[in-house]
Length: 178
Image 1 (cartoon, rainbow, N blue to C red):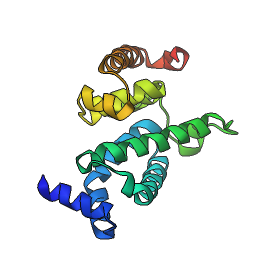
Image 2 (tube, rainbow, N blue to C red):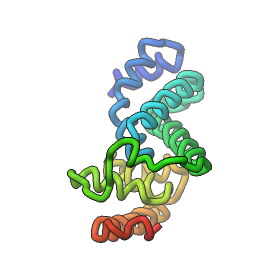
Image 3 (cartoon, rainbow, N blue to C red):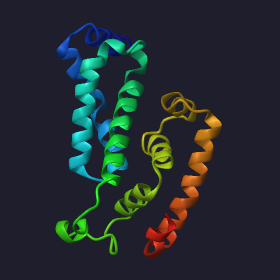
Protein backbone atom coordinates (compact mmCIF):
# COMPACT_ATOMS: atom_id res chain seq x y z
CA UNK A 1 0.00 0.00 0.00
CA UNK A 2 2.85 2.40 0.73
CA UNK A 3 4.17 2.00 -2.81
CA UNK A 4 0.76 2.96 -4.18
CA UNK A 5 0.56 6.04 -1.96
CA UNK A 6 4.10 7.05 -2.93
CA UNK A 7 3.29 6.62 -6.63
CA UNK A 8 0.18 8.81 -6.27
CA UNK A 9 2.17 11.44 -4.37
CA UNK A 10 4.75 11.50 -7.18
CA UNK A 11 1.91 11.79 -9.73
CA UNK A 12 0.49 14.69 -7.75
CA UNK A 13 3.93 16.32 -7.81
CA UNK A 14 4.01 16.15 -11.60
CA UNK A 15 5.41 12.72 -12.52
CA UNK A 16 3.69 11.82 -15.78
CA UNK A 17 4.90 8.20 -15.57
CA UNK A 18 3.37 7.77 -12.14
CA UNK A 19 0.15 9.41 -13.31
CA UNK A 20 -0.06 6.89 -16.17
CA UNK A 21 0.60 4.03 -13.72
CA UNK A 22 -2.15 5.34 -11.45
CA UNK A 23 -4.62 5.52 -14.35
CA UNK A 24 -3.70 1.99 -15.44
CA UNK A 25 -4.47 0.71 -11.93
CA UNK A 26 -8.00 2.07 -12.13
CA UNK A 27 -8.80 1.77 -15.84
CA UNK A 28 -10.89 -1.42 -15.54
CA UNK A 29 -12.91 0.04 -12.69
CA UNK A 30 -13.46 3.24 -14.67
CA UNK A 31 -14.56 1.25 -17.72
CA UNK A 32 -17.06 -0.85 -15.76
CA UNK A 33 -18.56 2.24 -14.17
CA UNK A 34 -18.70 4.22 -17.41
CA UNK A 35 -20.16 1.32 -19.39
CA UNK A 36 -22.67 0.62 -16.66
CA UNK A 37 -23.85 4.21 -16.73
CA UNK A 38 -23.66 4.90 -20.47
CA UNK A 39 -24.25 1.41 -21.97
CA UNK A 40 -21.96 2.11 -24.90
CA UNK A 41 -18.31 1.23 -25.45
CA UNK A 42 -17.73 4.42 -27.43
CA UNK A 43 -19.38 6.66 -24.85
CA UNK A 44 -17.54 4.88 -22.03
CA UNK A 45 -14.23 5.43 -23.83
CA UNK A 46 -15.07 9.11 -24.35
CA UNK A 47 -16.00 9.55 -20.68
CA UNK A 48 -12.80 7.85 -19.56
CA UNK A 49 -10.70 9.98 -21.89
CA UNK A 50 -12.33 13.16 -20.57
CA UNK A 51 -11.83 11.91 -17.02
CA UNK A 52 -8.14 11.25 -17.59
CA UNK A 53 -7.60 14.67 -19.11
CA UNK A 54 -9.48 16.38 -16.27
CA UNK A 55 -7.62 14.33 -13.66
CA UNK A 56 -4.27 15.22 -15.22
CA UNK A 57 -5.13 18.93 -15.13
CA UNK A 58 -6.48 18.71 -11.57
CA UNK A 59 -4.12 16.15 -9.96
CA UNK A 60 -2.72 18.85 -7.67
CA UNK A 61 -6.22 19.13 -6.13
CA UNK A 62 -6.11 15.54 -4.87
CA UNK A 63 -5.49 16.18 -1.20
CA UNK A 64 -5.44 12.64 0.18
CA UNK A 65 -3.55 10.09 -1.99
CA UNK A 66 -5.35 7.11 -0.45
CA UNK A 67 -8.60 8.44 -1.96
CA UNK A 68 -7.24 8.61 -5.52
CA UNK A 69 -9.68 6.00 -6.78
CA UNK A 70 -12.63 7.76 -5.17
CA UNK A 71 -11.46 11.07 -6.66
CA UNK A 72 -11.14 9.56 -10.16
CA UNK A 73 -14.53 7.85 -9.92
CA UNK A 74 -16.18 11.11 -8.87
CA UNK A 75 -14.71 12.88 -11.91
CA UNK A 76 -15.84 9.98 -14.12
CA UNK A 77 -19.38 9.99 -12.72
CA UNK A 78 -19.62 13.72 -13.32
CA UNK A 79 -18.55 13.24 -16.95
CA UNK A 80 -20.98 10.34 -17.42
CA UNK A 81 -23.84 12.34 -15.92
CA UNK A 82 -22.97 15.25 -18.21
CA UNK A 83 -23.04 12.95 -21.22
CA UNK A 84 -26.37 11.48 -20.13
CA UNK A 85 -27.80 14.97 -19.66
CA UNK A 86 -26.63 16.06 -23.12
CA UNK A 87 -27.94 12.81 -24.59
CA UNK A 88 -31.39 13.42 -23.10
CA UNK A 89 -31.51 16.80 -24.82
CA UNK A 90 -30.98 15.24 -28.25
CA UNK A 91 -33.91 13.88 -30.23
CA UNK A 92 -32.76 10.84 -32.25
CA UNK A 93 -33.65 10.88 -35.92
CA UNK A 94 -33.54 7.08 -36.13
CA UNK A 95 -33.81 4.03 -33.91
CA UNK A 96 -30.35 3.05 -32.61
CA UNK A 97 -31.30 -0.65 -32.60
CA UNK A 98 -32.14 -0.54 -36.28
CA UNK A 99 -28.76 1.00 -37.10
CA UNK A 100 -26.61 -1.23 -34.89
CA UNK A 101 -28.57 -4.38 -35.55
CA UNK A 102 -28.95 -5.03 -31.83
CA UNK A 103 -32.23 -5.68 -30.17
CA UNK A 104 -33.24 -5.71 -26.53
CA UNK A 105 -36.29 -7.87 -27.28
CA UNK A 106 -34.23 -11.06 -27.58
CA UNK A 107 -31.25 -10.71 -25.27
CA UNK A 108 -28.77 -13.53 -25.66
CA UNK A 109 -27.06 -13.01 -22.34
CA UNK A 110 -28.52 -12.47 -18.87
CA UNK A 111 -25.63 -10.14 -18.03
CA UNK A 112 -26.44 -7.88 -20.99
CA UNK A 113 -30.06 -8.01 -19.88
CA UNK A 114 -29.00 -6.83 -16.42
CA UNK A 115 -26.87 -4.01 -17.86
CA UNK A 116 -29.83 -2.98 -19.98
CA UNK A 117 -32.08 -2.97 -16.91
CA UNK A 118 -29.50 -0.96 -14.95
CA UNK A 119 -29.42 1.52 -17.81
CA UNK A 120 -33.17 2.03 -17.43
CA UNK A 121 -32.75 3.23 -13.84
CA UNK A 122 -32.54 6.91 -13.03
CA UNK A 123 -29.01 8.31 -12.63
CA UNK A 124 -29.08 8.29 -8.81
CA UNK A 125 -30.18 4.68 -8.56
CA UNK A 126 -27.85 3.62 -11.40
CA UNK A 127 -24.84 5.17 -9.65
CA UNK A 128 -25.67 3.42 -6.38
CA UNK A 129 -26.15 0.00 -8.01
CA UNK A 130 -22.99 0.22 -10.11
CA UNK A 131 -20.78 1.41 -7.28
CA UNK A 132 -22.12 -1.02 -4.67
CA UNK A 133 -22.77 -4.20 -6.62
CA UNK A 134 -20.49 -3.98 -9.64
CA UNK A 135 -17.56 -2.21 -7.96
CA UNK A 136 -18.06 -3.67 -4.46
CA UNK A 137 -17.78 -0.28 -2.78
CA UNK A 138 -18.99 -0.16 0.82
CA UNK A 139 -21.96 2.08 1.60
CA UNK A 140 -19.81 4.46 3.63
CA UNK A 141 -17.40 5.00 0.72
CA UNK A 142 -20.27 5.53 -1.73
CA UNK A 143 -21.76 8.07 0.67
CA UNK A 144 -18.46 9.94 0.84
CA UNK A 145 -18.03 9.78 -2.92
CA UNK A 146 -21.52 11.08 -3.66
CA UNK A 147 -21.62 13.33 -0.58
CA UNK A 148 -24.75 11.62 0.74
CA UNK A 149 -25.66 9.83 3.94
CA UNK A 150 -25.49 6.05 4.17
CA UNK A 151 -29.26 6.06 4.71
CA UNK A 152 -29.79 7.81 1.38
CA UNK A 153 -27.53 5.29 -0.35
CA UNK A 154 -29.43 2.39 1.25
CA UNK A 155 -32.72 3.92 0.14
CA UNK A 156 -31.50 4.34 -3.45
CA UNK A 157 -30.24 0.75 -3.50
CA UNK A 158 -33.55 -0.56 -2.17
CA UNK A 159 -35.59 1.33 -4.77
CA UNK A 160 -33.16 0.34 -7.52
CA UNK A 161 -33.37 -3.35 -6.57
CA UNK A 162 -37.17 -3.17 -6.65
CA UNK A 163 -37.15 -1.60 -10.10
CA UNK A 164 -34.53 -4.04 -11.39
CA UNK A 165 -36.64 -6.96 -10.17
CA UNK A 166 -39.60 -5.56 -12.12
CA UNK A 167 -37.50 -4.95 -15.23
CA UNK A 168 -36.04 -8.45 -15.14
CA UNK A 169 -39.44 -10.05 -14.48
CA UNK A 170 -41.38 -8.16 -17.16
CA UNK A 171 -38.89 -7.17 -19.90
CA UNK A 172 -41.58 -6.51 -22.49
CA UNK A 173 -43.09 -3.77 -20.32
CA UNK A 174 -39.87 -2.20 -19.03
CA UNK A 175 -40.03 0.93 -21.16
CA UNK A 176 -43.40 1.84 -19.63
CA UNK A 177 -42.04 1.47 -16.06
CA UNK A 178 -39.80 4.48 -16.27
